[in-house]
Length: 280
Image (cartoon, rainbow, N blue to C red; front, side):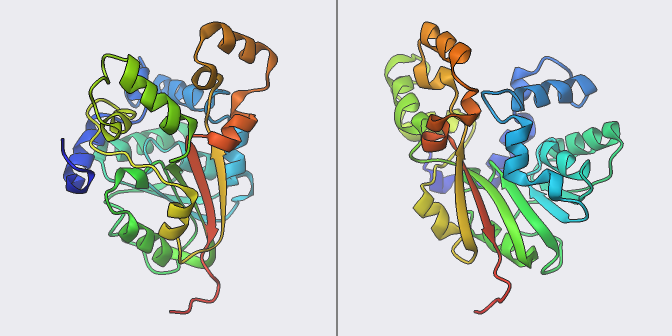
């Protein structure tokens, strides 16, 4: 088994170039209007991240006139929401596929954005440039994300904010579900926990890491006002047995707003501020 420390950035790039997020679950041709509609429906489902919750995380509705950078912009979903609310948006991504998808989404939606194919360790932007820098589900696919975090700090304006999502170490998924997969699913039997964790994003995904609040706080130690929000724990994941899942879906509120999701959600959302006074 390849150690996480041995995973090269080229390997990560090759995987995501061939496997855009959720593309395997969408029948429509990549980059078409139907593809984006299907992706948005999957993402905004009550079990995942409804738009109201996404707006709470990102603050789309209060982004008028702000400069926003998304590192690992994927197919442009997050930046599109910012742009339609009046933000000046820029996206960077490791893969040409993502950049092409983002440009197509914006062209089809009649919005303007800037997109650059580049890794997050070498951002082609001046110091103190953006009001918001977000990176959702990206840093946990990097062996050492600290150089990317340092670049985020550099290009963010003093008083600007970061919005980041990492996989949560103490989530129901990591503690319970992945272990059950190793025990009962023939596909995962005999594999290490790290291998099963990697496979969460596709059978050939080279790397996925998990973070506790303490580990995330250490990663973003130069920032202040760090806040955490846990999301994403569906009733299906929690109850597992179909009859119990159906009862929960019928009588309980949407799982995206549930207490279990806020306690043991898979997505560790992080908000923090670059200090207005920058002392070495």
